[in-house]
Image (cartoon, rainbow, N blue to C red; front, side, top):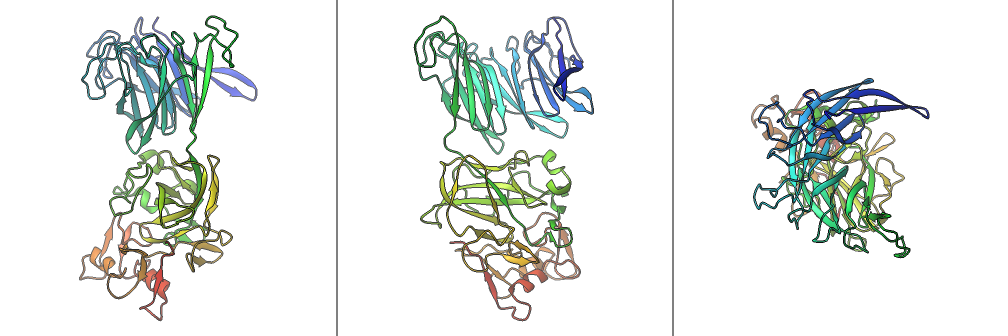
Amino acid sequence: WAGSAYIFARIGSTWTQQQKIVANDRAATDQFGWSVAVSGTYVIVGALHEDQNALGGNTATDAGSAYIFSQTGSTWSQQQKIVADDRAAGDYFGYSVAISGDHAVVGAINEDEDALGGNTANAAGSAYIFVRSGSTWTQQQKVVASDRAANNDFGFSVAMSGDRACVGAVYESANQAGAAYIFVRNGNTWTQQQKIIASDRAADDYFGRSVSISDTHAIVGAYFEDEDALGGNTLSSAGSAYFFSAAQQVSLGVKIWLEGPYNTGTLSMGDALRTLPSFPLTEPYTAIGFTNASGGGSETTNAAVLAVTGNNAIVDWVHLELRNSTAPGTLVATRNALVQRDGDVVSASDGISPTSFSVPAGNYYVAVRHRNHLGCMTSTALPLTSTTTTIDFRTASTPTNGTNARKTVGSAMTLWAGNTVRDNPPPSLLKYTGVSNDRDPILVRIGGTIPTNTAGGYFLEDVNLDGVVKYTGTANDRDPILVNVGSTSPTNTVTEQLP
């Protein structure tokens, strides 16, 4: 009963065994393979009766473990053994497993303590979420049900999709009706969004025996449920499944050019910032005074996202806003996301997905802002739904609010570069001279007295986003401001066209 897992690969319509995998520290009765999941080039396998910690010591009978394998070519190799930070004998960590991108979740049905390690309740159950950075997986958070109770077996089943996880508690309630819990991630924190139960729940249905989730949809199995879909035609333990949908969700596929890093030769943007040690893994907008709403703020990314090269390489963080359809000066929701070299704005968590907002489908003005470029907004409120709506601010065919909201660079439309000072109250102005101008902070950043100095790093004053602040010389950050206000009239200004 040491256990194994078998990986199959599809060629055309044929599936063939690619590899048999076992744990590097396999031992009798570990039951490696009790649970399995796959996402892209990663596999996770649960071994609920495994006894040792990640280093092979500190024996705790049936504490449980999980093993993550990664694929290189056609070969799968063990990348890491993971265990709970608070592992204890009999927890059955690994009873259930799921993986999605750089996150994995592992259920431990017999675990007794709450998320803080107290409030013991026998076999209440827990789930543990892990995050990958490079080739290392670390525990990000332990989650439990908000109404946890003894013998609920929370963690009997788990599923994960992007920033959402679903955890089944098959014995929830005194009569084992069962329940499932949806968790969502904001930044590095997972919070319970909702407890879900069957609309016709009854004793001994065991709702939560199995769960699966994909984006805004989840399905939960209740294998002892007796009635058909209309609530009749009783058959003992015939079983049912229940489908749930998250109603409040809209998805956006925004595309922009930032003038600073835009290259008219390659028709793409430079991505020098992502390689800086100082590039922030947590969104920078909250810290510099941008307002967040409806779940926006504290979004995070990871080293794997920043390691991507080519057209999908990350250029910088951007700030997206949904505004009220009748009062566009009123924020409804925000998200801090990442923009790629080709202009696609993507979710910070995976660097691939469109940006989602936890608001009902409806009409919204859409604004995009950047920390040292002037923002812009759609000229009208647009209908948004859970189906991704593409808004391409790179082209003149997408009308924007106000006058001269974007700069024309060849055939492209870009956000105006050079706004190193955020004006309060708004709107922000692009200024070369006078009080609160955008030129002086560049000189201050390089030391204030020697204009030929430079400063390397992730700074607001780095107008062209090349990772180096320069006041004079080739590719300096001062000249774009003068050009944008009008080279012959340095007292001119450019006004951000946001209400």
